[in-house]
Length: 252
Image: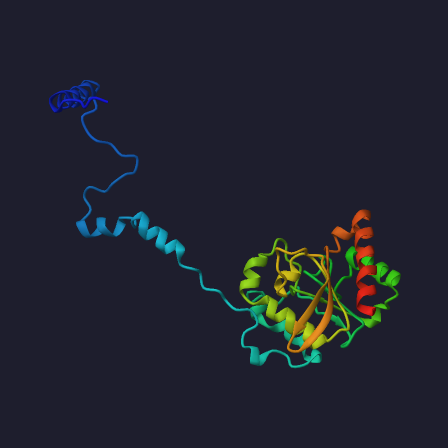
């Protein structure tokens, strides 16, 4: 490509400027307004940070507020857990209303862990359609409801919770401590967001056979779809087969 002579380039630029002057445009214009009468210091204050500075600021991680406060103040036994669950402000950004307490006995045959209370829950956990489904499932499994312990990861019904933020804030440690205190013989986790909190590798199948390990205690763990998903006939059949396979393994 042949270079344009400097004299010709200067002539082209002059011609372009002349064309704009004839069109009535003889000043430079910008989309954003500027205060021409402002003092130099004020202008400096209004100057936005350079793109590199903006990128550095965006790269700084936001402060993570830990859930559960001081571990030394966590309940030391299951009997004292419900009162702490209903009153500890850090569990839900300071909000304590609409919380639903876990229920059941320590050392239960099965601990049922769900992601969050149902929308209709108030006094009792799983008092809505999911609870009705679970009651029918437990009856088919041959497990009495009064031999179970029922708990949720979240303190109240929360539409679209940020599970990643909850994980980073330490909710998994709270859940693990809760399971440790309940000390069930078996654990069923209904909901795909629970196993990652307990240290399960998301790259693996969420429904593979698992065990819960915490402070020297090992508990057989079965991960399953949420109870709302199990209302579909196909999901029910799939869970039932996996339940049979699971019970066969842990009783062998």
